Amino acid sequence: MILEAFLLMAAALLCIGLFGALTQQSIVMLMMGLELMINGIILAAAAFWYFLAPASDGQVIVVAVVTAMAIEMAMGFAVVTAIYRAQRIDMTDSATELEG
Amino acid sequence: MVLAVFCVLSLLAISSGVLVFVVDSMARATFCLLVSFLAVAAMVLMTGLAYLGVVIILMMIIEMVIMAVFMVMFMMNPAGLMPMSMFHNTRGAAVISGLVFTGLAAGILVVDWPQRRGVPAPDPTVALGEALMGGHMLTMMTLGVTLFATIVATVVLSTGRGRYDRLGDDLDAERADDPAGGGVGR
Amino acid sequence: MSATTLLLPALMIAAVWFLAALDGALAGRAAGRPVGPAAAAVEPVRATVRLLVGQRRSTLAADGLLRWAGIVSLIVAAVLAAAVVPLGERPLVDLSVGVVWFNAMEVVAWAAVWLVGWGPNGALSLVGGYRFVAQGLSYELPHMFAIITAALAAGSLRITDIVDAQAGLWFVVLMPAAFVAYLLSAAAMAFWGPFDAPVARDTAGGAGSELAGVDRLLFAGGRRLLLVAAAAMAVPLFLGGGHGPWLPAWAWVLLKTAAVLVVLVWLRHRLPTIRMDRWAEISWIVLVPLTIVQALVVALVVLARGGM
Image 1: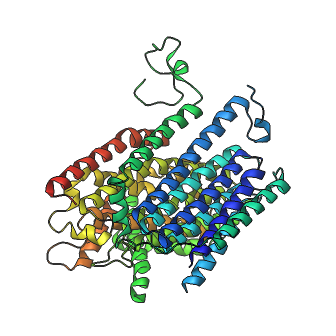
Image 2: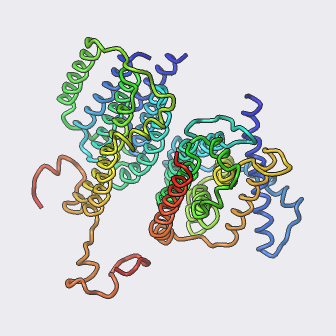
């Protein structure tokens, strides 16, 4: 239970999420990669709170990150729905042109 | 004992994170992501943040159920009955992810982390509440207004019919033209 | 500690038996064939044995892992949710964030019922699972506001603190709207009574339509266990916990939980199944503003009484 262990875990989750976000062709799966990245950030924030500065400021950072994750999910699904209504696609490769 | 729990939770989080992109069934991918979130929430509970850990469990379960609904809506292989892989640029992405991880790990292991400053408050939940309502009220208000803006923006982006479809070209129909009943008519 | 750990599931199973017997008695009376207490008490046992020896059903291209995960997590969530309810003076586990823990465990039911609806690869069971997600989104905000109002009046998220704060006045007198919203959400979270659209007859049983044998027994049992846990939670939050004259605390907890269960069973046989669009409208237009105003009123009362 040392700081480096928590941070290495967080970095691993971040990089798995980054790999997923870069390689997935489907927009919803790309969002799952983003969720994994924010997962890693939440863990890192909690670890920093506990090991470096256990004041209430660190907890506010965790609250802000969790809220950002909720906002990102909501907006991501709204954007997917809007793209589908406009062009009837759901893959990132098909959404590369600013047409329609 | 604590070390054993930490190792089990970290293995669970990482393996289920990898499984998200490996399994064929989209429903299973969503719930693998949920398992990863629950493992991270358990690790947050281990650091003593009781309220935040339980709130993360609560929010992640709700979010993953909603994500499952959207997955089934938008993905073409929701049950994994056909084996298919929908990747592009795997080699480039693997290189980038590997470089990022190496850089972060080097930084984590090399940096001389400072000593802990202070001790946790006797009740972290009360400390968080007092901070959000006191010194960090600006953060609280910003989050509140941003969440409200998100609600409005998601409805605007995802609705298929606007007010001209519902109330006519001059916005003067007596009752709104909705497919579902109920409501106040406007 | 280990004796109490076994006591909680045993108590919950006894409460489920009481619930099923009462439900059967009221159903018999409504159908014009009144049954006596002995016959009503034997009927759940008979149904259990029949389902235990029944044959399990498997469908084409079913996702057995997810269906099993759904059934098991419903039961585990119900027991974990009841672990923070005080049985007498103290609960099994006295968490400092007991209210939020209860909320997190009942939300597991969303995932569980969706998984049970998705697993068998059947259209009607999928419809049942989706109906429960729609119902869940609608009841969750009034439920959260109701339980937060109780925690607000006591100034703590710990259940035993909430019980201690009701020594003078029960919270149901202070916040009646929150209590009504909580009762409705307790029925909705266990898809019971007027909220049983996810397992309604117009979808041939909805989420449970493709279950048979042990699976059906565990799913129905998990549903009733969750209802018992929600009814048991109403007691420390709104009905004063173990406080009361003459009897010891655990007796009052049992009596009050039984009273809440009687109200919920009566509600089931009184109201028809509510449609999802109507429930969404009632919940978002009426219940959410009502519970917010209730929380505001209670907050003003707390500030006037001397603050936190």
